[in-house]
Image 1 (spheres, rainbow, N blue to C red):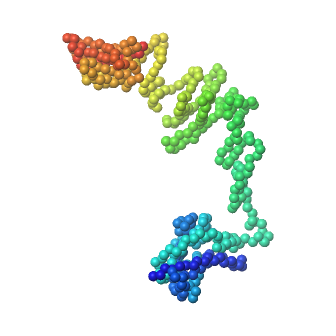
Image 2 (cartoon, helix red, strand yellow):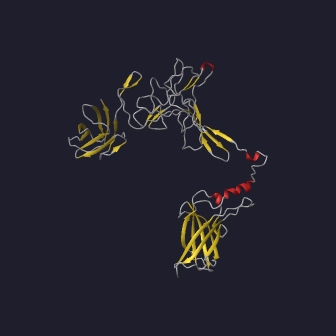
Image 3 (cartoon, rainbow, N blue to C red):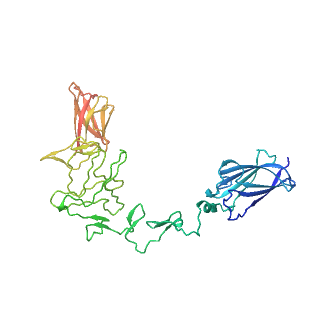
Length: 420
C-alpha cells in the first residue's frame, strides 16, 4: 500500500458577536495525498484526534473520531470538538496548560490508525472565554452597578480582590512594631522588646511582665498547653530555647523576697506530663539551680516512677561524703555474690567476674582497682573452714580461697568494695 502524505491546515474562524451561543469547536483541514504526491480524491478516510496536555507525550484530556470523504481535491474539513467522543470533555475554558493536537489516520476508513503528526496549539482557536459574557449576561451598558461590585480584603500586607488576584503591599518605612500575616503576630526586628507592666524594661530579656501580687495570687507570665487526647503527644506551657555559646537561659526565673515564692513554677495533672521540662543536647544543662532546690515529692534519676524520696537507677558517683544527721556514711562502689564457677549472682550491675586457673578476677566498670586506692571485704561461703586473700593486677580485684590444708580451691563468696 502506498504511504499517505497529509498537508495539514488549521483554520481560525472569526465569529460575529451576534451569536447567541459560542460553538465549542474549531476547524481543521487537511489535503490527503499518496507517497507520490497524488491527491486522493473522493475517498473515505478515518481520523482520530487527541488533545494532549503539557507536552507532545502528555495526558490525553480529550479524544474523538471522524469518518469523512475527501473532495475532488483530496481536501477534508473537520470540526474538532464535534466528532464522536472517545474520552474526556471538550472544554477549552478549563484548559490551564499548553495543548498539543495529535492526528492519526486510517486511509481505509476503519479504526486501524497510524500516527501522522503531533503539533502544539500556539494560540486559542476561538475566544471561548467570551462565552462567560453570554452565560453571565454581563451588560456593561446597563444602569445597575450591583453586578459589577467586587470586594477588597487585606491580610497583613496582602491585598486581594474578589474573583481576582492578590498583591503584596510594600512595608512602610517604620521597621519596628508588630506585623500580622493572618496567621502569626510578631515583632519585626530582633531588637524589639515586649514588656507588660514595666515602664523601663531591661534590654536583657525579650519578654518581660510584672504584676502586683499584693492584691492576690497573680502570675507575671502564665503558659498553658491544652490537654491532648492523644497520649503520645505533649506540649509546653512555656518553652525556651537558648542558641548561644556565650551563656544565657532559654527560660529564666527569679523570685525576690523572704517569703515563699518561685522563680519558675511548673504543675502537671497528667501522669505522663512535666511541670518543668528541660533538655540538653550539648554541653549545657537540662536544668540548673543556683541556690537551694526544693522537691516536696519523690525524685527519680533514670526512672519515671521513683519508689523513694530519691530513687536512682544506674551508677551514682559522689565526691565527698554523704551525711545523715551528724554521721558520715560511705557507700560501697560495688558488692555482690560470686558463685563457685565465677558467675555473678545478685551483685551491682558494674561487676563482672571470671575464674582464672586458681583464683577469681573481678572487674569493676569505670574503676581501676588497686590495693592502695580501694578497701575490699571478702568472705567465703563454703561449709568447711576456709581462708581468703585478695590482690590486684591490671585494675582487677584478685580473690584467692584456701581450704584448711592451704590448697587453693573454688568456693562461693561475697564481697564489698569501697573507694578511698
